[in-house]
Amino acid sequence: MLELLFAPETWIAFATLTALEIVLGIDNIIVIAILVGKLPAHKRQAARLFGLALAMVTRIGLLFSLVWLMGLTQPFIHIGELGFSGRDLILLVGGLFLIYKAVTEMHETMETGGQAESHDGPSLKKVAISTVIMQIALIDIVFSLDSVITAIGLVQHIEIMVAAIVAAVLVMMVAAKPISEFVERHPTVKMLALSFLILVGVFLMAESFGVHVSKGYIYSAMAFSVIVEFLNIRMRKKRAALTGKPE
Image (cartoon, rainbow, N blue to C red; front, side, top):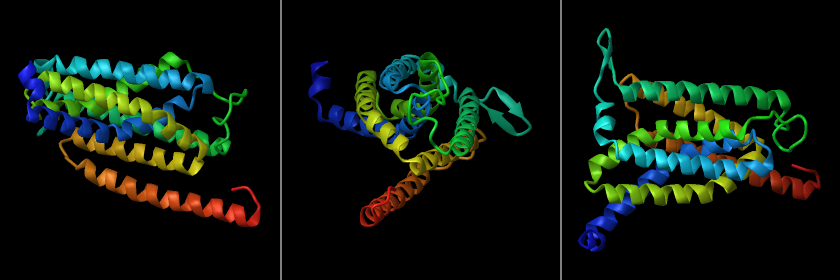
């Protein structure tokens, strides 16, 4: 164990896997930002932490179920020439859920003008915190399948995989609150986030049918759109400062 701890290869593998988990967790943080927005303000941080903690336990559980997890990649349902594995079905259901959630949130935001979730008044649609926590944990399973399978292929020691998952989830716990609050403060950013959830959902569904699309395309488009939106926000703030009118 001590040899593993002090080996340079261990720390390189740990850093690589942690970075991978954090990058693949970007879309997960966006989902969390949308889901916790349904809760009263004083319950949101608890939902984020409990949801991510449950997701971390689930990911570690997947790691310790290596035989079952790798078995998910073997097709067991065939429709014509298409073969569907357990992983494919999970990605398909997860993609459909993301699209449904994003479209319904878009509709509600447009109907209310983006004001319904900005306070704890009677117009806020009540949702049980347990429901939000379970949704966060379940959608994390969908997002973590590929990263866990990739981790198994990259590293031979399960201790390194567990440590990388814990480190990545801790980073996500710290980042989730400020990102969620920023999304809630800016309705246009929220619509942008919902649009990307639809895009991710479509990509997950495509993946379930055997059409592999690199997530790099999604993240590149997301980064470009976020940069443009930041410029718009700065422009609106400067215009408001010059004219004395609110944004």
